Length: 288
Image (cartoon, rainbow, N blue to C red; front, side, top):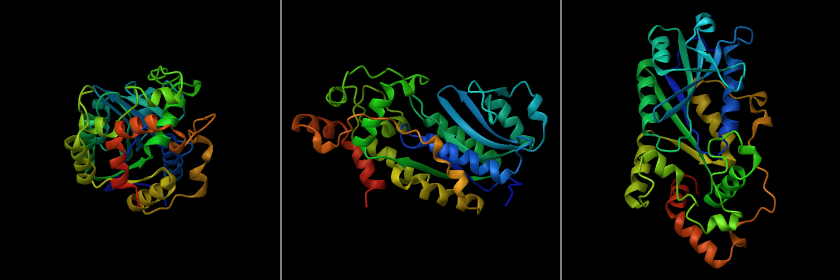
């Protein structure tokens, strides 16, 4: 199969930090590159669109070569052959003039809130006369926090704006501190302020958003299954083995990895209290 027109269903991936996001984006890149069949023309591109409180990675298929000389579509700082940057007005102009097809949208992590990104995705979908197939990868809270701690305190994250933001000298110290995330997902999708405590009200608001958009959410262990389901639904074409090249799995190297059962009673109690609502999300969407 070769993609030749705008799909009526567009995959929209919510990239939750340390939940296989790098791998998902890599699979999408390989998948669309193969289906677009344009290795020489490079018409399949990942456009980074950043503005006030939004950050999207948008997979597109350009219909002409005009973009190659358009000064409003710049080379991305990562200098990858299929990565470009542009502004929202330029993207909208290309859509309005039928100069590109939207293949998929990734809602990238933001330090504040994601509501502006969700709103922008809705605008783009409406312009394309398409609907969104929303999906996300979830991870059990303890595993995610252990990965996040070692990632942000290690050299792997030196390119990230949040590199070094965790100041605790050990993972156990982090678990006992106020730096421990209570729920990134609930805070970012609801836009609640940092000083506010997460309550059942905010938990329900987050669930209402996920449910209203008919999010497909699976355990990180089922990442490939979820990608297959979404892409098959949207493009009626399966993912193949070469699309799943594992080289881009962003697996943080953790020395002396522990489990929650290794924690002393006080640390475990503090962790479970602080991550209560995040674990409720896990139970609602991922626990059998």
